[in-house]
Image (cartoon, rainbow, N blue to C red; front, side, top):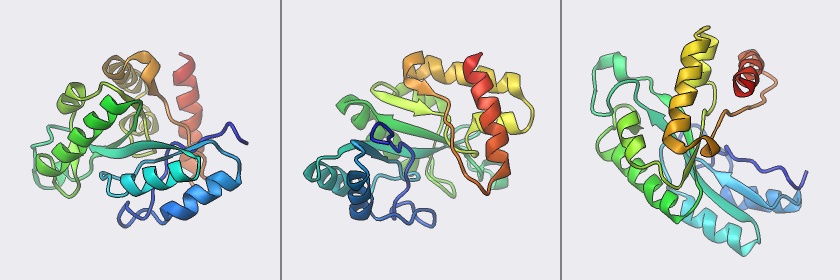
Length: 197
């Protein structure tokens, strides 16, 4: 169990979505003998300083990230329900440059792209991708959405596009397990097949 690291974690700072408090999270990680943990709150980085400081004090490696909302169009588009439901993408900081770029992306999401939620788009992601590791995120990610709708070839092209943005060694297709979400198992099978391809 010690080599396992949770990389997709929402805390109390993921408003209306997360429940985990930072200190108990880090304490549990330490108790289980895990060496690191990520915090990837939705669209915001409100808790990263507290997380970073406390995790370091406890001897747990803090991995800073964010699950950002990706506009289906341009981040500046704000048209009724068309731009209301963005995709998700998970970003993790690989180094300090990645942290700086993540801060820029989150800030732009709030200042330029906010429409129901803070959103980025492919244009700004390309500009600020250095030092970041990307994953395809949860079922609300674009790749899982395409796979669920049977558009496997489009999902493959989108995965290739993200691999080009981050570098193939810095983009991953994400697997999640949830016993009460049947679609997750179905998508996981397709994600594994896509990764092998």
